[in-house]
Amino acid sequence: MKIQGGCLCGNVQYEVKGPLSHADHCHCSMCRRQHGAAFGTYANFNPDSFSWVAGESYIKIYQLSSGNGWCFCRECGSTLGGTEKGEITSITMGTVVGDPGVKPESHIYVGSMAQWYEIQDDLPRFEEES
Image (tube, rainbow, N blue to C red; front, side):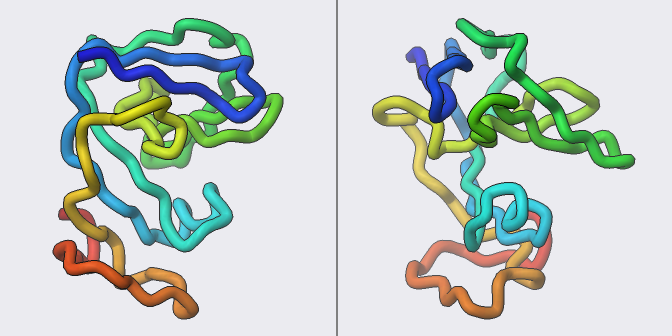
């Protein structure tokens, strides 16, 4: 299985040679701000299966003091994935082209979710990370 994706402007493209796993809707305040939405949806993968196909020079990483962060395209601002110590460890499912082969399994960090949003599905909910 090969998953491909990229940013809004098309400068950055990536490929994951292997399955995605453990997809979640993250409602933490940082993801909400990063995406400008009620939540961000991420899926994990084996880091050895990931590669930038084009535009790696456009990648900017915003890293927190914890070592976790996000990578995004410095041209269009698309959030492409989550990072740990500068290495991409998850992708934002909205940037995947086609079927990602996985669906979100839960809502995480619902303890800090947007007060104006109401979850409309029956997925498990966790106050913090699952």
